[in-house]
Image (cartoon, rainbow, N blue to C red; front, side):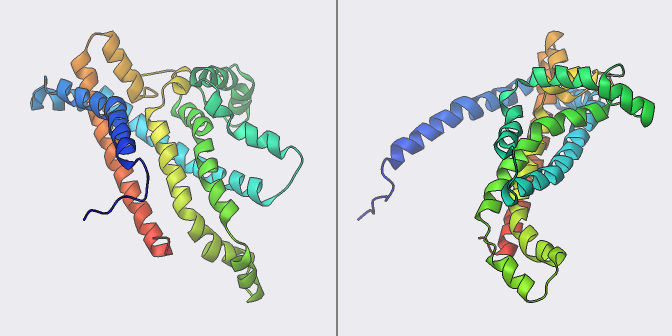
Length: 275
């Protein structure tokens, strides 16, 4: 005798989920794969090993990685302050954290490019004082990616900090542990899985970001040209096969990196006893 599921409406929910994922994810991705079959292996390798293509991959993934690391660091600090301290204007800062979610990415890119361009307020200040140019360089891409990705880290870490009980901290302090030891041995191991999730989300968003980057990047080949822009350029030149080959390569690399991050998350949770 079959046992009924305790969750009502499981089959309709599962069917809706499969249909939704098929329409939004599986069918578009399968179209991308089938389109790439128009290329033979030699032509495919020739496209993705082109110096301009390799340079755009290097710029996209390196800037996304750096931005995700910086966003994770400052996102953790921001979440810590918002959870552990009470101060005037706290609700305003909560709204400000979510602002990049609501702001169109193209608008964010225009604003950042205006501020950090060599003649802009901050851009001119950085050039005059430090000799550092932000706009139209990979550094400008990193700045834009930090702006749009830091909310992912904050909103991922914040619930964990809210649920974290202070009893363990008080017990460790009563046994003579310093604040640094309490943080390193108790707080950080419990928050690290969520922080790793926030890093993965920030990295994934940064790799595929387009609107907030194209204005501040300058889109200079071999210097600040990103993969999404190169794909759009190929499409504008009616090179659909070339654009498909680049997009498929980016998809595979992104999937492998996210898979490795998920495996690392599972390993960390097992070590910390959360699974």
